[in-house]
Amino acid sequence: MPYTPYNGHESTVWFDRRKISASVPEEKTSIDATAFSLSHIIQTEVQGGIPPSRIVIGGFSMGAAMSMHLGYRYHRDVAGVFALSGFLNHGSSVYEEIKGVKDLPLLFQCHGTKDELVSEAWGKETYDKLTELGVKGEYHTFDIFHEFNKREILMLREWILKLLPE
Image (tube, rainbow, N blue to C red; front, side, top):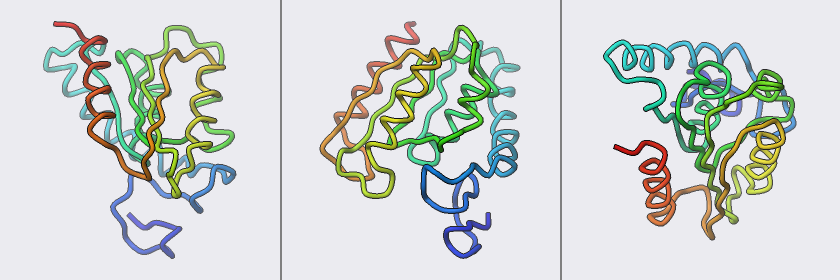
């Protein structure tokens, strides 16, 4: 996909954006196109017999942002969303579309305090706004950069196992 921050060169990204900043508007057309494609995967699983209440959507960085769009805009019936080093831009369509919505998926969000690409403040701001709008969840920080670590993954594993008991 052409990626504007890389002067329009092809890149392996989930969606386009004008620049890496919380203050720029989302490229909703690009986000929605990817969400439409990913929704087919979820629908296939549901048609195969997996109830949405047994599905967790998640990702890292842009994948985390995409997961929040999927879980809070398109598939509110999934069990949960996890976002590792994730973000939503100011004025995100996610914020607009969940106002007044009850029974939103639970959120597990983590961020590195040394993250220089997506600041921890941006991640925490995203979490705070989502919880202000009714999302229930937990937020954890780690002394890492724009990455994830074993402890974070083990915590995520425990969260998923608690959320989806056998």
